[in-house]
Length: 80
Image (tube, rainbow, N blue to C red):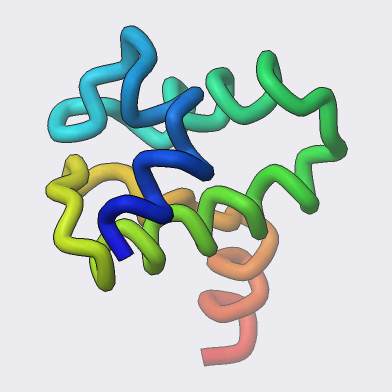
């Protein structure tokens, strides 16, 4: 899996981004600058990347998989 990750995500893993200390916004910028995509598609790609990286044994920043969804948080607080 590590080899597949290195090949498929070279634009992240072999670029200038330090994935062990990066923020979600920094990773989002890398995906956006590489593959001009809508924000919802980018979010899904990042989610897949972070899960795949875990399975491949690639160390990531603890900040990466966490993006707060303000709408969800508001709805949760409103109804609970």
